[in-house]
Length: 97
Image (cartoon, rainbow, N blue to C red; front, side, top):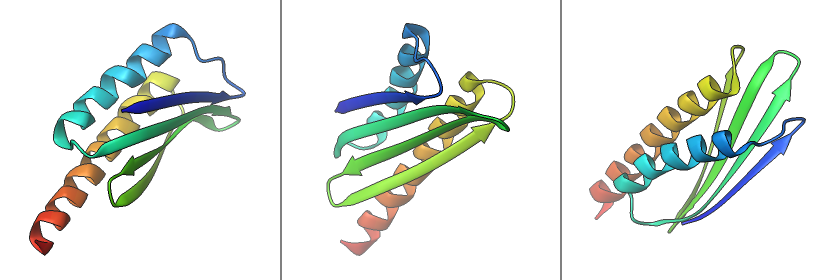
């Protein structure tokens, strides 16, 4: 899987980069068809925002999460939302076959 992490008004440290990579490993276990992932982390006036685009074979998923506390909480919520979205896509593609 090709992973790209960018920061808007936010410096992406090695610890944040490792946290994102660890969370995406969990999602990669659910689906073998993940081609690439782009994660954008930003700090805004009303909190921290994390957005991700997953390019799967046959589908693109876009998920956003926003948390007022810190960036790690936003990454955790983002990972949970991505996990649900990938599982939902996987179930939908199974039922079509």
